Length: 278
Image 1 (spheres, rainbow, N blue to C red):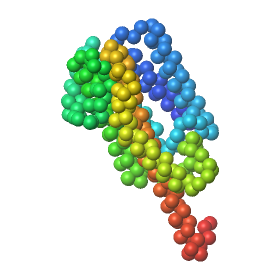
Image 2 (tube, one colour):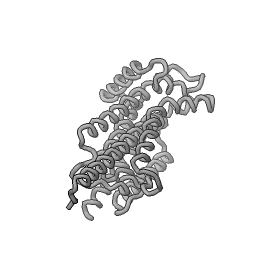
Image 3 (spheres, one colour):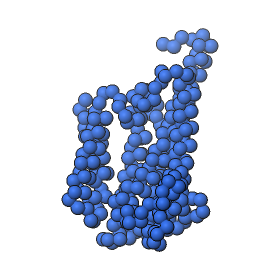
Image 4 (tube, rainbow, N blue to C red):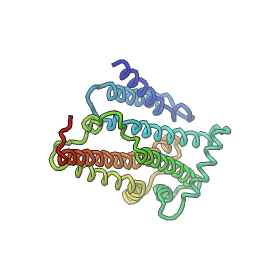
């Protein structure tokens, strides 16, 4: 019980740090804004503590299947920190912030080609956006998309090396997929594969669909709104994190379906051979 409590406290603290990072590093946050950030960070920390300290699952998926959630947290933290340092360079430049801004500019320029997610992200701005607004969104989208793609590649590599989920511990579908009803009807492997394909498809398409929907549904985002450093940080982080998280979830569910199928095959082989498992 004590290790679980300590782990839940550590995770809650890390979530609080993540949510508070932009308001700590970026200037121009008033007292009301700081109070709101503190409230949101406290809520996120309490929710994380309750989820990881509880015996039974709640909302967090793959709770006992590291490093899935660790990779997702690392992805979001790197996204938020990189975008925050990039935005800080405009008001309080330093060697570190200038480096991040230069790297983001190079990545944004390289990934800004027709029909790319980065090019589409810049289309969310309204027609009155200045060149500086376009470059800020392009650079932020470029570095965010690259970091998200790298996180997906790391997770796929972990699976390819047969290190996820761990073979040294039993995988409990109910605990690690609390929102997936395994007894709802139909073959569980087919349902897992169907959900996996849906999540992978959404993860791939959302970076293209979100800017298109925003552009079609309105006259574009107000450049004055995106000039707020925190707004740009969280908007871009969400634009990159949500598709990457869905893509990783789909890949993880496909892996679980493969494991169940392999276990069934082994059971059939043992039964056909006439052996009774001990």
